[in-house]
Image (cartoon, rainbow, N blue to C red):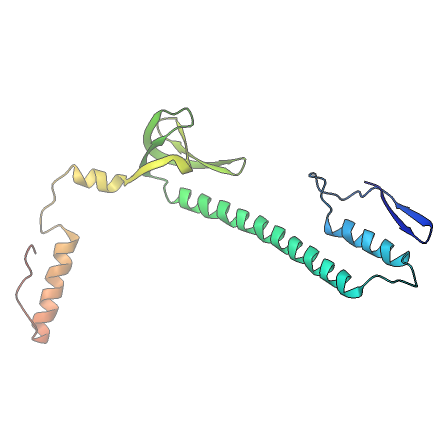
Amino acid sequence: MAVSTVNNNTTTTLPPASSSTSSGAMSSSDFMKVMLTQLAHQDPINPTDSNQLLTQMSQISQLQSNQDMQTNISSLTLQQSIGAAGNLIGKQVNGIATTGDSVTGNVTSVRVVDKNVYLELDSGQTLPMQNITSIADTSALAQAGTTSTAAGDPSSTAANQLLQLLQSLGGNTTAPAGA
């Protein structure tokens, strides 16, 4: 993109900017080159307003900061999704595959493709992380299939220990309902 400036019958043509973004917008380095060329070739009788230049520099700095922040947030979001998906390994998930079919299986691994997180299931299917409809702990499912006795129940053991502690302290010794 060639840029021309005209001041008191002199014309200066700048070379095409090499660091422009793919959308055709100017980058901060392009802006600085144009600004410095403008300052170097300004009319000494009618100089450029320094407040206007400072405002433009501030705006381009804010724009660059916003772009950097957007990149960082996108990176953090992807990292958080990968971590959340990693926590699903060993759990049973249900969801909708990219084909629209219902998918069920235990998560065996996590894969990232084009900044999208996918769960690999033991059924051989792949489920996009954002398409999960339900999650179940496989150890809870296994326990639900077996009957547990009150003596082996950890919450029952903890309740008994709490009652013994209260009794030793002289507190309430009646067992709560359901214990």
